[in-house]
Length: 121
Image (cartoon, rainbow, N blue to C red; front, side):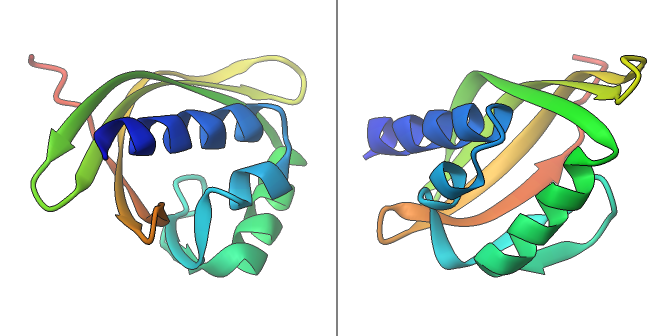
C-alpha cells in the first residue's frame, strides 16, 4: 500500500510542477482538504484547489520535489520536500525543506497538511 501512495504523491508533484492541474487533481479525492501555505488556512475540493493554484501561479513560480517518505500510523504519509519558490522576476522567495503530510481515502489523497522542519536535527 505504501508504494501505491508514494507513486500517487510523485504523480501529484510532477503534475503540479508542470502546472497540469487536471493530472494533479486526478490524484485527489473530490472532497480533498488542502493546506494553503501561500495564503494560510485550508481549502476543500477540486474547484477551490484549481482557483488557489491559478492565483498562486500568477504571482509565484513554485517547484516542489519530494526527497523522502516516512510512513506514520493510520496510513499517514509524511513527505519531506525541497521547496524552491521564485517570484515572477526570478528572485528566490524560499528555498528549503518542508514536510507535507498526507492522508488517503479510497486510494486517493484526502488531506494535505504542512509541518515545519526541525532545523535542529
